[in-house]
Length: 212
View (cartoon, rainbow, N blue to C red):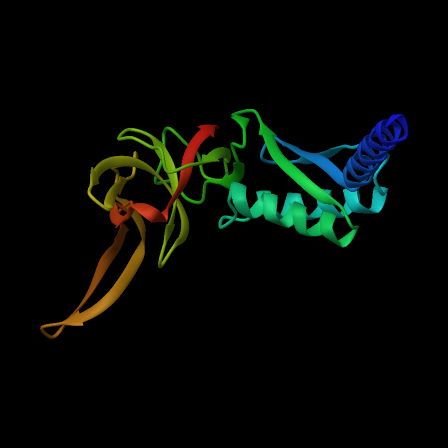
């Protein structure tokens, strides 16, 4: 009877030891990854039982910087890219993004191109936006336009799935002249450029400008 008791105790100890060993082995191949970014730079930090390969962190830093500057990246896609790199090094990664806007809040850099947002924003001015679909009338946003690429405008109206984006600059700019022939006469006419105001699908808005 006593031998059976000690046998049972021995089995329990063995099972516990095996479970502990399995836990340790599993955690040796698990790593916590934090992508620190302010929208213009990144710094990837790893947290694990043992030091992780420096090559893995270097690769993550390079990829994260590309992702942050990509207009189509999301929190989910950045995390997936970090996990894919970790997997190449036989690690299971838990990833979070830390920025000036909080945890898992993704910033992105942008640049003003043109004078349509004068006097609020100047041509060539650097911006930091927060990628989000949580925006409201009055916000300055960056959106994808089918003809002009990325545009910076003020959100003037939201109508269902569409948003109306408007320029702060309301002045018409003379950009040149053109000679035309009409009714038997040559005439010189001015060519004017009006700041862009446009309706776009709501999903085209990338995010809200937070820093300028």
